[in-house]
Length: 338
Image 1 (cartoon, rainbow, N blue to C red):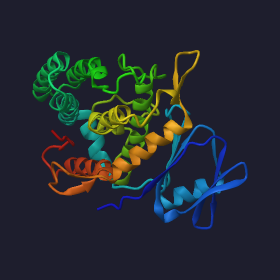
Image 2 (image 1 turned 135 degrees about the horizontal axis):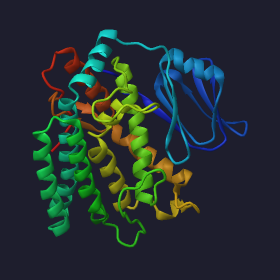
Image 3 (image 1 turned 90 degrees about the vertical axis):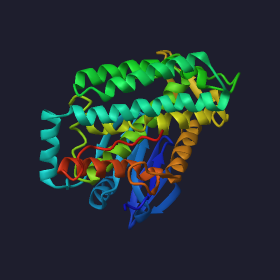
Image 4 (image 1 turned 90 degrees about the horizontal axis):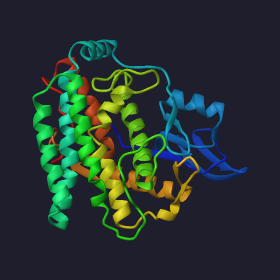
């Protein structure tokens, strides 16, 4: 099993990161803030105006340390990748499946996604009593699950997923319990996010997406060739496929918990003239800290039937997908906790 190492998130603007022997050094205005041994770090995520020395770039590539860059909103910009590794036969099997029979894998992923999204609504109904809007949405999503299970055409699967997502996000505002805290969700908005909830969702989706991409590369798969999302230059389509399994169960629930427990404050967000909502550095740190803590939690994996840290789930799903593509598993078992 892969060891769960720490990810380093750098959000302070005008930070300089460089290498000193076998350590990573973080400085701000020529003052050392932190020095960490490289063996304790698996990935480095840089947000906004963060400078990285050329020697550290090469060092990360050599040591297979993930290095990704985002803008201040959390939108992915670039990732540095070292020497490509992996079985070429596995990648050929991936490309063949993507072209000839993508529907089965896409179907399994979307069924898992809708089940997880519906479970978020059902959990709220169990905890807080009957709410007609949530109950109706849950019924519609159950119908979407039944439709998706009997579908292998990717275009139809995308349509079912889109309808289920619209149903889910239409009632998400009912999941916000902390009254008077200023948080309101009026539907999903991206690029840029138009409210604080969307800003947090987009930010953490982007971070988790990079973890998924790194996990896929770790088992030798090509993160850019997917089954559900269409190929597009610069997009890790397969990583976006696998991310669908984790959105509601991992990220949506985490954001709602932070809001409902008042661990984030609406004052930590500002609205620009364009309508884009931006997080403060302190708010971003709260999200990243909660995300890291969640990665340390252990759960019973529904397919492996053993306890695993949440942070290893992308690696486990990548391994299961690789096993399916090699022919060791008849179907790809997506991650879904009911």
